[in-house]
Length: 364
Image (cartoon, rainbow, N blue to C red; front, side):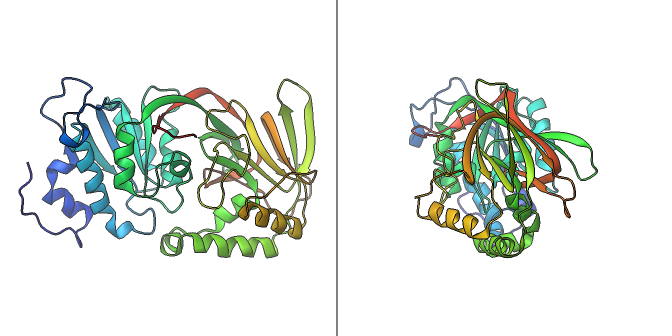
């Protein structure tokens, strides 16, 4: 138990919080006898989580200075529900995946990703094909998956919603690409994977500036790319549903979308795309025209966008992309907002599924 009088956490570091509140960082109820929550606020609600690892990025989002207090609140919700939980802080790029692997080996049945889409992306790499469930605690600048799941932006409210969420097995995308060393590799993704201008945008975003300015930085860099990028064409070969015939196109931007909504103004960007869908929904920009890019973006903002011959919505089972000869610069590739490498690329649905916590009433 924690005493009624506790030190203020307004200016405490995470390590100081750990020392002051040790019970919050590895909370274990005295006894869990059933799957029913015994706490007053949750009485009679069925549990889907028993042993949880909350892996969080202390630097994600615009409010990282309040991160310790936010994590404390989330852990308090889990503790009140009688769930065994430990909080694990990332300390370097890639460490979230390592922490998740260790938590799975220790017997955790649920991993909560506290951060933005990048943190979720790291963690899901080791959860695809396992029965361990992934939950999303929105703490980042961009929380597209959390928005699609209807979790909102309040971590405490999202934590309470996750308590009654149902674990569901869902298909995930997989992207094969060449890494920075030129070696072929692959990653899973849940939100989207892009080739072209959107990946170039992600490559230009500084993490510290993103935390400070949030979406304003996205808008500034997007305008800069729109004004200066030549939008070079690359080759894309689509394998469409029910056919082994390849559809060949030359495109300047390709975006494989796996969510119904990115949140905010980007709702229903790719009609028909959902986490449940067994196909890829791909936005193929077959134009280099800046005015066409701008008119489409304005139509998206007004929620009146349509598709035509130069900007097409393609439903396919896979797509293979490669650079054309003589390109002056590499074409970048991203997945879930993380810059991965360059062309060539293959995007498809993975044969394994991901167990994801889906809130009641959500329509992902």
